[in-house]
Amino acid sequence: MILVSSCLAGLEVRYDGSHCLHTKLNQLVEENKAVTVCPELLGGFSTPREPAEIIGGDGEDVLDGKAEVVEKSGRIVTDLYMKGAYTALEEAVKIDVAAVVLKENSPSCGSSFIYNGEFKGKKATGNGVTAALLKRNGFQVMSEEEFAETYIGKKG
Image 1: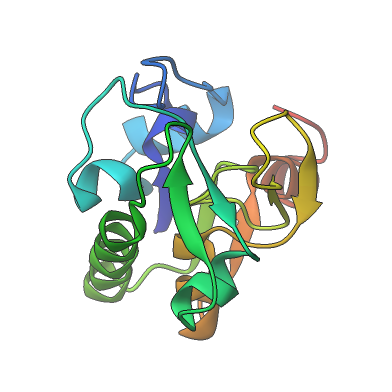
Image 2 (image 1 turned 180 degrees about the vertical axis):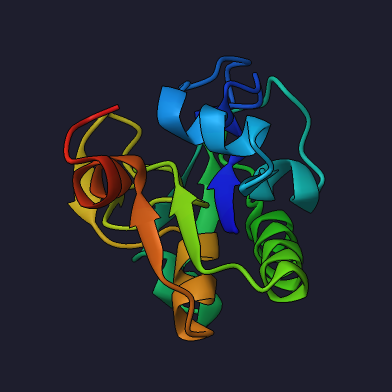
């Protein structure tokens, strides 16, 4: 069983109300081989919602209290991102997932890259809050592209 970002399974839960359907991941959900999770909804956000980025570091820094997750308007939403991350961790532990596939670039789910906190579309190396927490707790976390390259040999 794997845990998958809800937006990758085609659920319209992204900040702008869209999804990022990955057909193979959606197929695994339909076959009951994967379970969806959206840390931002688990944290208390609705869809659509204001875009947010991590300012002052990455998800590791947020977990350590050295960085904040901030909406474009300036509202600090770190607590909601932390709540979502810990709820996603509880789900991963409960299901005993073998791997986690998260949406790259997200302040929650980015597993290699996130936006750099300037709200200008520029990316930086780093983990989102949920990805960082899951990795700290020993889960294999990968992006949808890493999943495709590893398990199906191509982008899906």
